[in-house]
Image (cartoon, rainbow, N blue to C red):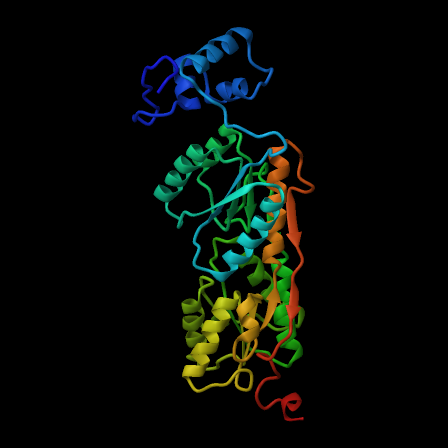
Length: 354
């Protein structure tokens, strides 16, 4: 309902709360021009400013409220999917920082579908979000532009593809982590090392593959493409990937799975074939999720600081809501190889027989 009692038809064709787009259409100016007026920018001509301000008053447009001392009242934390334990670790990190800052957190999943992403954007506008942390997802350029127009800052964790230059990112040292996992298996004496990859659209997946390749090449071992099988970070793909490796005429003696969930799936595939870990085959994961220290056997893995990644992303988006520059536009946190009981020298090796 407008301030004078008249209903407003929005740009989307429905009736409801007036938007910046509606004001821009009535004023005959661009949406960024209205945004500049709303945010008190000086780079608008006096005549245009007066016309836009009159329409803002007429239709009762209200800028998102920000309480004194609480510049970031609400953070939207957006995942492609929420069916992975690592999502919980990132949520934990974001929530810890948001809570300390007096901010709330809204968690959403867009499932990689454009319709879900548009619905999320509609919900975001309705709840007057102050900042967005996007995890392992690619945001449609149109939606990204709308965030810019609304003045809502964005930070991406583990980006899918290359984000815009003005979007800060937070990730882990995935390439060095992939190298560390592969070099550990090489040091144990393995020479045929299988890899179950992550989704190729994700930069972190490609970096772990690059680390695997670099470690083999550094050891003077040619990369056998038949030992690289696709996965999607989930248990089922780890199971299927390990099965495919075992069906090779010359199976590997060790498997590096690019996520802990896939590593657990690989261990189950080995168990169903009557093979033991690590006596018959070694397995290494990536993430260091809480449950893998209790797996049978406890999993050797590469720890990426998921909760810390969430904390850095939340701190960064809070700085942006205060119009402060981030400490760094590209943050890469270190990874660490965690040795447990799922790796050993290959069967029949001298090291194993000692």
